Image (cartoon, rainbow, N blue to C red; front, side, top):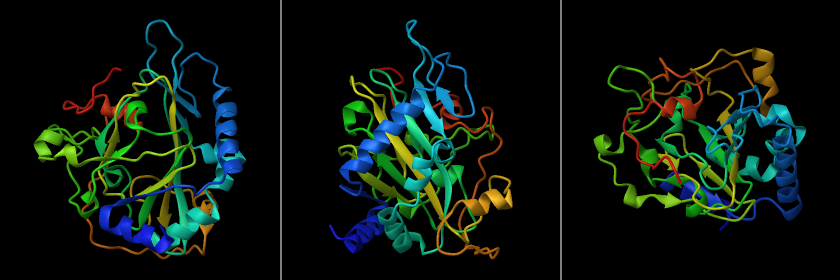
Length: 288
């Protein structure tokens, strides 16, 4: 698949999987750095500025659920956010002036790593225009049994579905039955370590519990066009500018007409796992 073919597929279906984007040395370093960072967790299960944890099960120490903002944790991740092949794809998808919006590593531990309910990223991260894109780098092989991410093709065409409950609180998940969605059409984003996927902010996606004996870790790098201004958090301008990864920044903001519903109020802060724990209608089973 050429890059133009990949971009055409992305525009038609709301996602694309690109194998072999990272070379063997980059994959090995990604895995080694992630292992090294994870090893610094103290095992207490207490949330820190770097780590979130699954709930402890059966007396075992709690597993790491998320590494928060890894681009600030280790310079390797920051460098990876500037990867020329990733930026070349993004330039065709959202334009040449690109800012890293956010990063995280979601970690599904073997035999029970938590599910993430179906959702659209636009519900969490609205901007003044929709030139944003999420890039997923598979640190481990991803397959259905270990909780590979799934997407609903063509859902990027909209609409933005409800992610709030009947009381008006943001619960970060779609009630699949109420929305009339047929999840039989969902596609698993599978591949060996080093596979990279791109998805649109309106693409409906989620992932089940890890039912295998192998971990499933994904580095998510979230990007926006430089003139797409975030509508959901305060901007510290020097820090905001430090996340430019390609092209030129400007204080000009491009505003386009899109449906926006802010991810407020929330009963559980900003963690998707904690927010979704309050969701009344769940699609995925909660245990392995």
